[in-house]
Amino acid sequence: MTKFNALIVDKTDSGEISAAVRQIGLDDLPEGDVTVAVEYSTLNYKDGLCLGPGGGLVRRYPHVPGIDFAGTVEASDDPRYRPGDKVVLTGWRVGEAHWGGYAQKARVSADWLVPLPDGLSPRQAMAVGTAGFTAMLALMALEDHGVVPARGPVLVTGAAGGVGSVATALLAARGYEVAAVTGRPRQEAYLRDLGASRIVPRAELAETVKRPLESESWAGCVDAVGGAMLARVLGQMKYGGAVAAVGLAGGAQLPATVIPFLLRGVSLLGIDSVMQPFDNRQRAWQRIARDLPLDKLEAMIHPAALADLPALGADILSGQVKGRVVVDVN
Ligand code: NDP
Image (tube, helix red, strand yellow):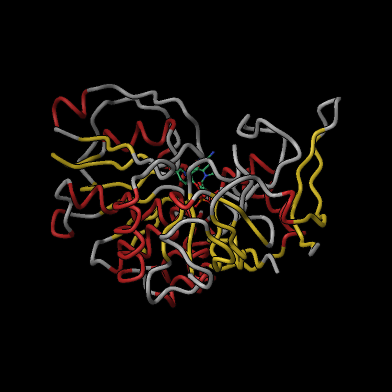
């Protein structure tokens, strides 16, 4: 039987986690109706958790992480997909509850796949990945709320990270004035190249809320950080503005008051990429193919191989990854 490479994470009886590239066979893959020859995967914050002991996301070991992948259908029992079709997968707890994209082959439910949109290669799709897909969901939510470029600047927190980088490039390409919050001043040139017209040092938003309302600065916000920063941002929103809450890189607590909601009509829009229905997924991927400048996407890419992932997983958890890691699994 043909063997192929997979990054296997295992746990000993004493609870120690190990991660190493091993050879497995098709029979080792979980059940599913579509087998995909994976071309590229990527690294997201959740992958960092699944590569190590943290997060409690993985219930059964041995495990293949990788919450997203793009590749070519190799075999399908579902009429929607045929061998040779290019597909992309994000979410559905793949890479957590189900084996994921850190292998040369993956077997999944057809319901979880999206046909790769015209104009995006599997490598580009994984440069976007779950992080970029979520950034697009956040942009769509702000648009649906009426946050148009004429309403004023949009803030992006955690800007040099994956969600933040794609959000910055997407918003700038759509004509928004983008203010990028970063804790890494050395990434200023990178963020300006992506389209940020203003850099806000992380320290400016790090302190907890002292006054529930500050001066009205932002028409919208894509927030990858949460915690005290999100609470501060809520108090800085313009009247009727909206914050798309995407992440918790800075914490899951929300030490805020309800005053911005009550006195300024501010909205907090929750963004979930995992359980998005198929139609919205397809709409988001088509918007990505249409709206995301591919030269900006290229500038975000940090190439990697399966064997690099354990170290990169630790890096993303400590906020040290810039842009998007693209993993060539072959
Ligand atoms: P990254 O690690 O690539 O980016 C996170 C960024 O946040 C960092 O690069 C850093 O940006 C900033 N940051 C990190 N730690 C802190 C801190 N303590 N305080 C303030 N800022 C901090 O992760 P991703 O972009 O992949 O994901 C971002 C968040 O979004 C994660 O919490 C992730 O779980 C979540 N997420 C949610 C999804 C959903 O469906 N809702 C889908 C995908 C991701 P800088 O250096 O510029 O300050």
